[in-house]
Length: 341
Image (cartoon, rainbow, N blue to C red; front, side, top):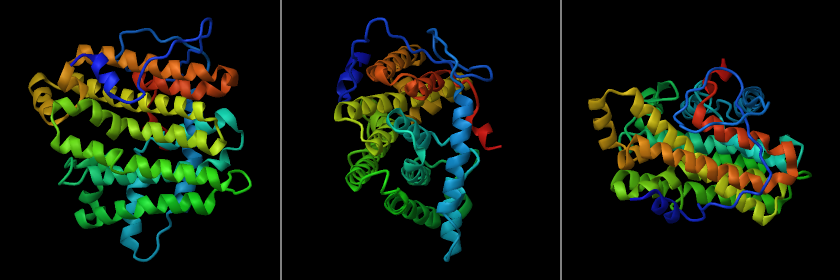
């Protein structure tokens, strides 16, 4: 299947013409990069590591407060185990806040939704790791939730985190900063993302589909969370409908981009025999196209995501964090897990 076929089969994942004479290249400062890209990354002085570290600390503190241990203790301990894991990157909440700050200044208005996105993300990972799903024994540098607490408790922890996220948005978003009508759109967006039109559909085809389902799996299982995170930030800030759609296409492209890069990096780090066994189990672009074609896809997705952000030219430097996420997804200029230390 040609890459153009992959793109056209994903709704709205098309290329737009870049405005002339406008360039907003970003460099992720700090530490050598690990890149799978054959292209060149331009640079500017935006310190993504410092920006991410600040938000990481603020969001983690809010999550600590949002999930206190209550009776029955073990459910809350299992929830906290995954949400507060040291290896968590906090990518969904950071993207949400960054999208919000394109349009508005008070990031506290976005924190409840940012925390909810992390809860929902953690819940989806708990369920993905179950023996009946991906059967993963490790997550975020520690034993998977079901390995630490048992399958029954892991299911309950995931089940509890989904509604807790929705409740957190409703209870803690400042009404003087975010009208109720915007919150309703945010909640609907998250519900769509995690349901049968989003990540659940991606997981189903990851379990039951063939390699011809790869594009749909990547979009729904990985692109959906990036899409939702960017869109929720824009919705909270009252972005216009055309701006919301740009954020939607941007977030989806970045979410898929990050996973394709992961797939390539994992394949490159394995011996050939181990890689062949791994790719038989994993439904990714490397399985379908091989590493070289996957690198081309990475460059296409990076270009796509940047072209979407070019439509926010009038907001100037406020868009810098979102640009920087794109190059970070490819080059991995620093280790996000170090931010928690």
